[in-house]
Length: 137
Image 1 (cartoon, rainbow, N blue to C red):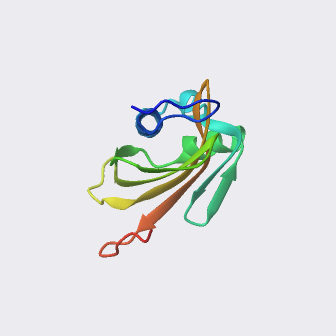
Image 2: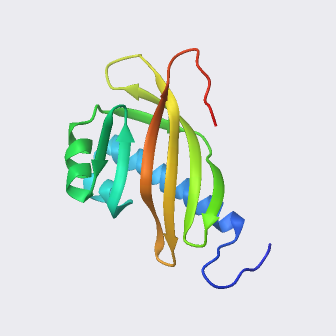
Image 3: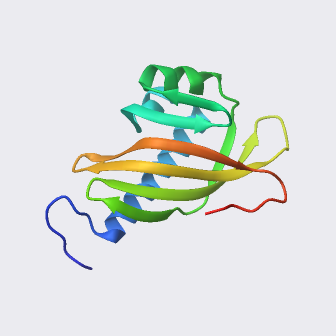
């Protein structure tokens, strides 16, 4: 494993941290743990889904409290490093709402801030994929 200095992180550490961040997002949104969920986002983070842009902790909490409940199933992310303190990630997902068999599929497209204390979302965009469509990267 390569060693790095300064603010740079090695690839394995970064990949593992991004996987944990995505897993916590799914767990917290599915269980309704809104305090923990909002804590995954930076103070001025942006969340985009469909035609909505939500920014800031209070707005995020209000949005997630009203969101459809269900289960999020996320694949492994493709992570690319863009700066010493930021990574980008694309992660496919399936969502199955409670009481409905309709499956929604798409990708999370993320900008993630990293620092010695952990990783947080700077920006998370939910890119919905209509049935029969393929993701564009």
